[in-house]
Image (cartoon, rainbow, N blue to C red; front, side, top):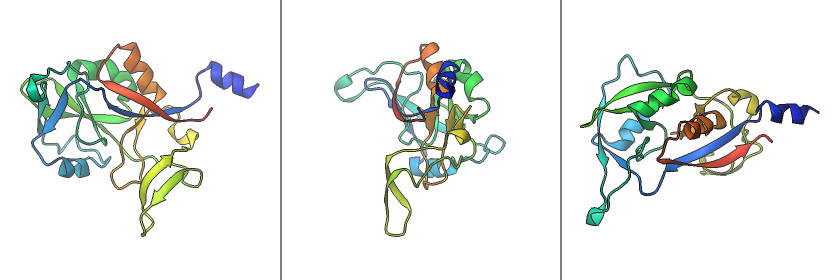
Length: 193
């Protein structure tokens, strides 16, 4: 049975959306967040990269302390911030899909994970999509991906959106959980099961 064999070897592809966990540190960027998100377009940046300064927000109003996060939440989703030790623990699964960019901060222990390239993996005909009048995608209500284009990737972005968020696969999520890292919540948005 082909489906049974795929399940046994873990060949099914699952795609996740992610968000910073409630109650964990946040990141504040001194550069305008929108300008930075446009610069992080999937093109290699390491050789010309000039680090951005990121401050960690460890307390909210009324002094409410936030827990230490291995991935402090950025104000945009097309790149991911990791503490250096977390990046090292995730390196085996992200090294082929992203570059690590330097970040300036007081603790000097953060890197920006910038997924490289855009993967034309969205099956627009099978998705439920809201569009602007000009035809560009406004919102994707139901995701469907072409599994063969993302098989083996830990993270990817798509060209169908002006500024695509980072989508994670089960490869990333499994390693995150095995490494017992904290600060991200995952929601499965698609599976080829």
